[in-house]
Image 1: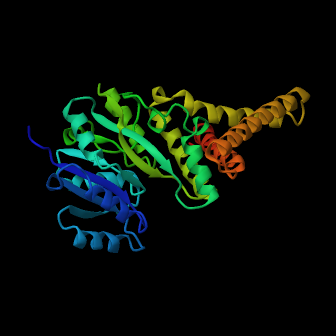
Image 2: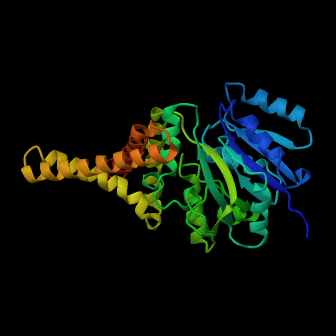
Image 3: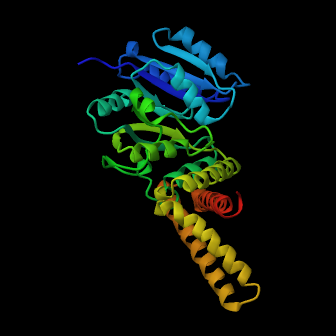
Length: 330
């Protein structure tokens, strides 16, 4: 059996602190390095990212690393520029904020070789993006059932077919058949690509033995921007593929809508004020209970307030952005 050549594609912009650890993790893979190449699609970084890449190439000449310019500075454009430059039969997408386990590439290639799916991926271990209480709270929220919902790649221990996986590994021929990433979507491009795989009759396989570490956003402000962007482009995605809507995606916008309607109606109608108070009170109590439980379980008192703050930031920014872009924005 031949060993397929693997191209690892990485969208990147101003990642001077994370790009070297990622490259070191790839240099430590169990997969033969002579059958690997790394294509970094850089959005014309203005920090020391390219210097760090050049230094790695000097230190590790045994692993081929190339940089493709991404002047659009958008993730789907970066992925497409990297695919264009890639020579591998297998394409594995990673993120500059991730660290794959040492057998990550080997397991992805083996799952594709076994025909388990047109896209295969694994699970995230979510770690704080900084050494602060906010970063710890955000990482805890991203892995919590109230933050992850039924997103299997954040919580499952069972291999199964799913609707999406983080990052993803594909045969190059798949892009020839269904096209590349949609550059009109500035986020949710991976989910849209997976929707096309499923429409084409393909499958998406999640194996919890395929593992990587993902570093969450470091501050509530960064988290809010991230989830507003996610919500904005999820709405655009749903307009094209309404059948992809999942319950976990429906709850936050419906809750935001319910609070808005009952809050406005409550200015004139007492039962609506009661409904608003009841919904807001139960929601707050649930978040505080989750925060207290996490603080006790992880022995981190900051989570008692930090986890509810992070979860509410995720819910309201994502749900509000979905609502606005579905109902108001053309």
